Image 1: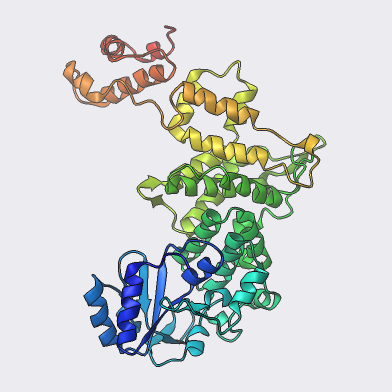
Image 2 (image 1 turned 120 degrees about the vertical axis):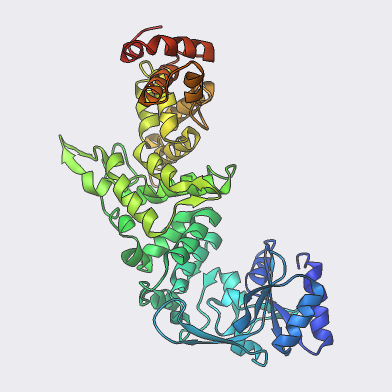
Length: 472
């Protein structure tokens, strides 16, 4: 067993001394049996009155009550302690349950309410004995997700999405009977934050998110929750440019490529790249047509903005850790072809084009999305001589780094306060002049504050538009 935190062992001993039993359960046991280091620990406590349990917890450390009514407590960030609980569906909705803690329940009765057998394995942290009432270890060995109970599984519709994200994370199959249960479950009661919680795990914790996306389709979750993804299925692409298949297949390949490109990024930017990869061709269903003997999707990048906004808004995706994920994803979708376009015209594209593009989106993230898009055509069933490289994207990011705009656009050299110090009266003219000077700065025609002030001084009494056309 991985090193069990001392706090877990201390609590388990205290509960044993009181005549009770504390068992590790859920993901920490599953992860350990899979050879993974658990991050979070869950203890389920049997045979101890909840009030006495709370006293014991208070003796060990500060307690955060998550659900006093059904006795769930947190000790620190990574340890949850609970008593077995009875759940009864009281109506429609993901949260429509009557929940009551009951430390007298049997282990089998308590674990029967869990979702999958691999999450219904328990372990005594003191003796390391494994308790496996539903043959979860066998399913781990078989790499199969199987519902604990076909009677209770459908009561929580979130389990359909959990099935897909677990299948992606662990690269497991879903038991055929469990899959059929999932297909019959109505998902319309799920709140946005719970949907996004599972999709985020699917995208970020799996090495091949396409596995989960395929399962979302197979389990009919895409039909119910993601019309933007459903629209991609069977949308044709020009075989010369996309030998891998339709837009849906290309999106699956692109998302997997993107996942391999984000590990060095902060979490919010990882999420941004993954969402942009998922959404990048949302405009193709509306723009794909047979033109001049070829399948084309002209202006699909702009057409993809509206469905991207729809998906992000429906899932309440806005900012994450202070980073404007929504704005960046939309910009990346709109401009995901720009690295290739710049490369094709590389002898004509000036530095100003890069600097202006950096004002719209983060070029390093754009590079990653565009690279994933290009390499997302190289399926294993495509002959290697038809594979695409990422030369355009590598040229693009190298140029962006040379110009120091890979992470952000240049900050304006001339600010409004400089003009006020020069004696210009507050008013629209300040904004007009600073904007004009900044445009010249983006083109490389202004490089320091003295030069910017000199131009501003001339503009005070002249038509500033004359200067934006002047060659320096």
